[in-house]
Length: 331
Ligand code: KG4
Ligand code: ZN
Image 1 (tube, rainbow, N blue to C red):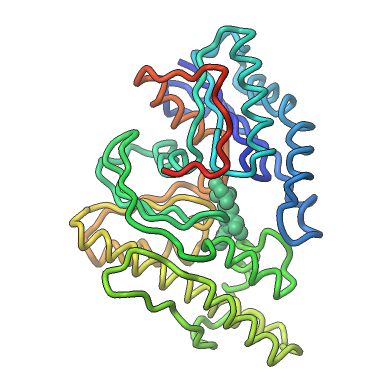
Image 2 (tube, protein in one colour):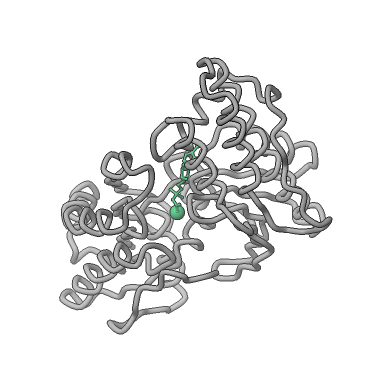
């Protein structure tokens, strides 16, 4: 059973072909980083135009890599939200057109659910698991109880974790998106060099907050603008340590409180080397299982959309041509 997955929710045009709900036979991503980098963030209008340019070659390329034609597909999955509405509409419209013309069943997928399930592209994991989804647009905690059954526990009150990475990277002149650059630079820095604040939310809160930390970095940079390169690495490492502290504390705390024996990381920030290391140590100390996909499956990709769609199709779900994109879709 082959499922095509199409993702255009933000600034990556991606398509993948998944066999039997687990084996990736093609997975292509066309990144727009270079186009948005000069602006220090995604420019929605430019993103939609790039999707229009790339969507058909990416889908063709994925099918070619899979050695398959449209006639071999059992279904198509496409992101229907959340995301930039202009971007979402490109993928959704193209998939509707193909599904209608070739009479292929299709489903609109929640991008957040797809991130939560991305781990299954790498390995089998038992339910329930505590999932931290940290990306450029979201920082959310869920208990995943089964395919299609997720309990929302909390989320960020201001910036997403990835957004904080990107904004701090911009302040430091590291380009966009900045998560990976800060991750790299931090390797040569001292995480204890600057005591940046950790948000102190009410005891037992399952929420996150990163805007105070971001502002603290801004003040720090303003006060010492002529910093040396080694200073930069120290600032990056100290900022990163604060983010990782907050993410790890909330996630492990929730898993302990709810007595859930396994933790899964998802979303672009789950590609972060320090977060992966810290979560591995913290879960080991608590005797919990720990699972995180390889970095390329943490960031946006078509394979996770195909996987989430496969499980929807298997449950008999189908969408019709009335389905609309939903920029604010929740889970
Ligand atoms: O999941 P994703 O690809 O797109 C969204 O749905 O937002 O996540 C992108 C985010 C960006 O903010 C990027 O800076 C961050 O993930 N990111 C990282 C790393 N790689 C990507 N953040 C920290 N460390 C990384 N290695
Ligand atoms: Zn994403």
